[in-house]
Length: 232
Image 1 (cartoon, one colour):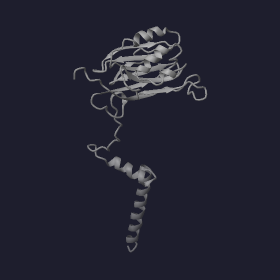
Image 2 (tube, helix red, strand yellow):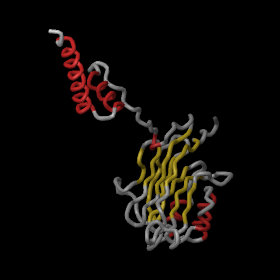
Image 3 (tube, helix red, strand yellow):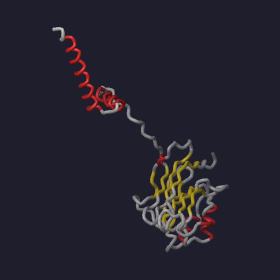
């Protein structure tokens, strides 16, 4: 009878040890992992663990909203001669392969600078096309018209001095030097006084091309100010 006390202690210790081993196997060998898992097992269905907040994106995938009286845009040039370009404005895809309105050369969307409405969108083949079609498209632009450009494959073989000059008048710096298979994205406007801040240009170079015969695709996004209606 005198052994009853010590035996009871041994039984308690063994039971506690076996319980700890079993808990470790079920919940994980590391105490931190096991504790976290235990918390999840014991969590009330009415109070599930808080999920990590997802990044919030705004119009055309911008990380921040545009200021008032500005239009959100995103331009993506074509990748080599395989993946077509994209032109997005105010969360509306103006030109893309999905819309089936892009092509080799220069893809251009004309937008009303006051209300942001699409005026026209066309692709101009600058390898085997007629540059006069591009000139007819750009010559009659009205003051304040926004012009969004994304290249695909070859944007420059058929370019002449007048075409380069028209893009320069819209605010482009790169148009004067645009060459065979360069990548180019640009947002400008008819009647701008300075060069546009919205432009990227990457030269076609064997030493730096991402693809065998083409540089990498370019992506440009931002907020372009709307034009104030005349008389206001």
